[in-house]
Image (cartoon, rainbow over all chains, first blue to last red; front, side, top):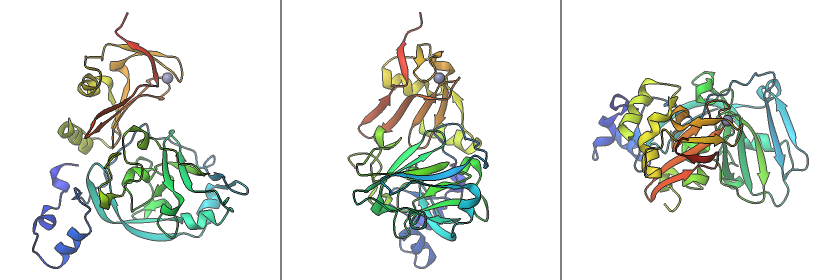
Length: 209
Length: 97
Ligand SMILES: [Zn+2]
């Protein structure tokens, strides 16, 4: 996260037209651009054997569903090119991922009418909470490739949630499933003073922002 | 704190430090140097000196984990309205006996 990763030339020229202006327009308030992919972890990197990995959707669904690693890879996937912003203030434009849309995953279950929130749970006991409305309609996906290669463990591999429209702590690493709930339930950082929604365009860093 | 953190981030991909690295932050949270204090991990029962905890500078905040079971024992977040401290994972935290 040192100075060498900051592309100040683009963010500094306020009246420059063209690409610089486009990059500026894509940088949320209070963020700086980087071409690096910093690693930030709240704990040791879990090493889950792919033979024992699964992704499970449970809670307010007609019947829980669970995919093995091979089954997950067989789900319809697509490439995603998205801008990512971390609450530690870096923004990385055009990050290339491959993964499965949350819409596709939820096609495997029937949601209870009371379903309103998704709790993403992970290896390493991390959780994050999102309203269902924030992850539907192509707004979120579970990624297993980054930049054309399998997602590395330090970046959340074998699979991580990616929610580009929210600060990156919502993009839970080492994800293993969704628990669908009627009631919201603040996750690991949301319960310690970080914003419950985390919209980077509104600078929702801390609760009360 | 932030500058040091960023330097360490640039050097280490898997950032693991010991409890002394969080000494300043802990002192701000507790109003005392607590690195020599002891507490019992509520997850596995191990009694550890704070200086031997595993520290993860985990993005938004700082996470201290038990050196034996890796369970979360203390979490600290620096917010504009002050430090947020969660020490529910560490029982009987106090000066060493
Ligand atoms: Zn323990």
